[in-house]
Length: 114
Image (cartoon, rainbow, N blue to C red; front, side):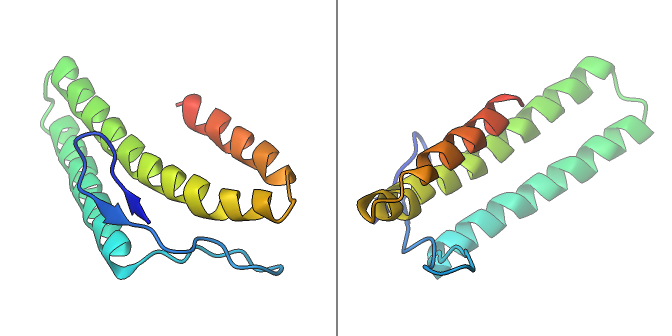
């Protein structure tokens, strides 16, 4: 299954959750590489923000960089959420497990608090 978020690279999502008690994600190597690359860039942005603070950079400039980092994290969350909805959640609903909908709503509420 392919996931294409607005202005984002097309990534393929494989089965997300396993059945049984242990829940795991099963992303393709391409998706993992995409997410890892994004997180590495975010990690670099965080280090950059720390450097800005150490150099007493103007507050507005630091806040702008924080906003960019939050946006990048939101992009990672969107990729994960879309893949989760299209695989794990769909599969569990098809299996008659509607509790997963409450789980997803709680997750979305957590994301929206940010």
